[in-house]
Length: 101
Image (cartoon, rainbow, N blue to C red; front, side):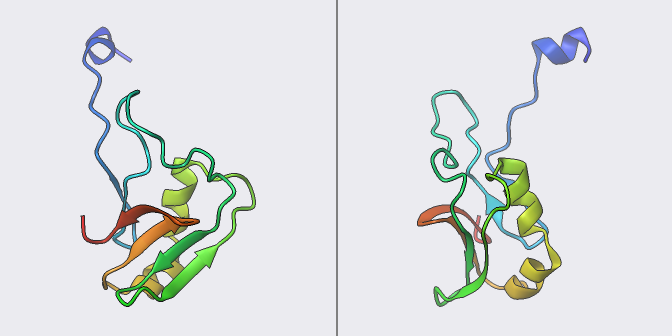
């Protein structure tokens, strides 16, 4: 990393887009923001469709990380389940993202 990059870090985006179209907002952008993953690292990742029906769910084999969630939401089964429709992602009961961002 160059001195310039150290002195001028890129801002952390407000959300991370996934292959299925869900934008995940769980990662904090600043130290003062809550980490929506905290305490939910072993919760079930659930994707709900436009009528609040569960279209995909998966339990973690290891505790969830932000990157692991993005990877899971990029799986072909999730992309097929969302199918360019409206969808929301949850860890347990905690909303962590949507296609509507």
